[in-house]
Length: 503
Image (tube, rainbow, N blue to C red):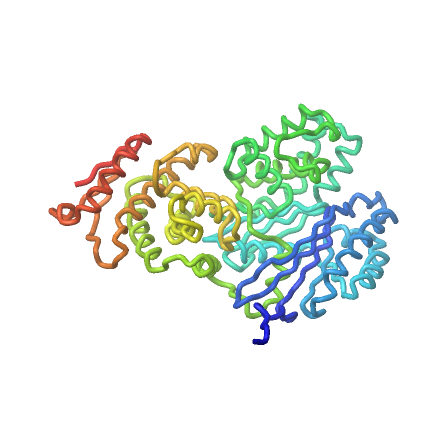
């Protein structure tokens, strides 16, 4: 019998690449499109710090250009196997500002054998927004912020449409060269940096404050570094101003960039973290931002999806969930049963309390549809396996905070109810998460028969933490299995300090 290949060779027409020559880092991302799904198959990032080579006359020095060209030589080899029409290369703020940028660009194009386009600040902001929108579906108006090496983009948009956008000449590298050039981190240095950032924001404040946005998303860079620090320090939460002030003090206490040792801060971001932090503080204070979550993508993703004419542009969440259900062989009918019950309870909860926010409906829907994802590994601890899987797969359309919430709800949807799993979230979020996990547990329990048209109309009565389920008279006696399971769940929630009764 003739041996046949297990899989066919990758079709090169399915490969796409985006190269982002940023002011701090150069990035390369390669994706493969399979059945309408975009899979990242390669990422390369190198700290070039091109903006550090700009002098007062806006001329790039030779050393910085050499660093950039050397980086592109490594990118070029990865790009050889991708059709030229499927590659997009862009330069951003530093190449916009440098008077001798043409020297760098000419050699860069020779190295890559590809045209390099220096995009305007407005186009950069637009592409950033599209990258965020494709990977972090939003409901209503969304404020998006990206702090780069030499520019900061601020965008307000709705779904796929940017409404107002601006690119400001301030970034973590240029501010580092201006306010921390000697490496000293003092309160005065940081306040000076914040003051200039606020001054640059003054002309555009009213243009953004007038919009009533439903969420604020930070795209990579400094916001991502802040979140990594918060998680490492035991805070699993959105970015808030009080956290930023605390991080400022941690920087000041270190005294010098060489001594900057903050738990959770990576070595690669150490030198530019205080300057980026100052810009972020100014943005929070000037634009009255209450909290910021991390988006799933930014400029590079915007470039990639912009090349995919047939890419699914709407309902990214549905596509992500469907892909996970298919990949991990989840019983879709059972998932939909649980989801239907959960959504019904969620609506009843929201009608009787003021804790519903943060696009929580999308979170409880996703957790309900994916709660059995861990069965792909084995049954006994499938809630733990499920949380592990959800920690490592990409759910386009959900912010990082929503993904964490989905993961932790799945982790706690069965067995002992350990509310300390939610202790890393901000106290303002915990009541909502407690409510969502109770909903998910009850919905799974009530769907235990795995059959349609079994459950009656069930009323949920909420009196602070005390919940009561009311069934039609005699229904529980006629369904002893669910009656027994509810009694056990009542005990488990009671041990967790959450009173539950049913009749």
